[in-house]
Length: 296
Image 1: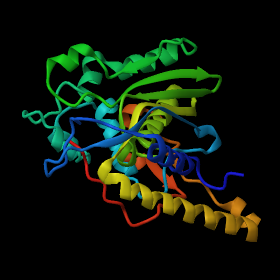
Image 2: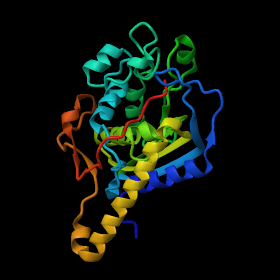
Image 3: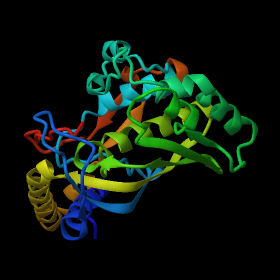
């Protein structure tokens, strides 16, 4: 019997896999702030799936997750799309400054691509007009845009959407992922795209269904290995406490709620939704926060 949340179980498994089987890169592009090459240990082709309709929301509890900021970033990409760093900061997304290409933007990337090709309106139209069509793909990987300006190539770059009866399902495809910082099980990328699924489902009249996440190359940075070990220790502590509760008071264990993102039932228009329409229930992350130095 699985006594812990799916995201935490996935995270424990992924850390162990990378520590056991991950390969170290050579001549890495990213560097730390002190100029040291930011090496990684990685594995290819990771896949996770969560059924939101059954209360299985992807949020890791082994360290605090900045879930509100993650959803705010989704707004800057898909709802009111922008690539302007100052505007993103004003809207509560402050982590893009390191990727300024010199003109105050992140280049023709992310929100700029969504705006140029009207991607989100086309997606909504396709869901409404051809629900069982199999061509509902939103891609931030546009070669014209990538060659037009400098800038970080999109990491989480494609979503594929499918209607299944009363449910809307979505798979997120990611080329590369810094596992402990953003891409990993229950990390910012999964939280924010599961939230996007909830919003688009609500706007188009469906219930959010299965959210899946494929990462082509998922890595742990060499300066994150100590934090990874701490997360393994926290996982063991969490599962031991859950087993203790399960054995001592099964009714109390059954009554424990899973972490779940809740969208205001009165919020029905994607383009008018705000972060205040979201609440996170039963989320009690383990503390303190872990230091995770970025490779830029």
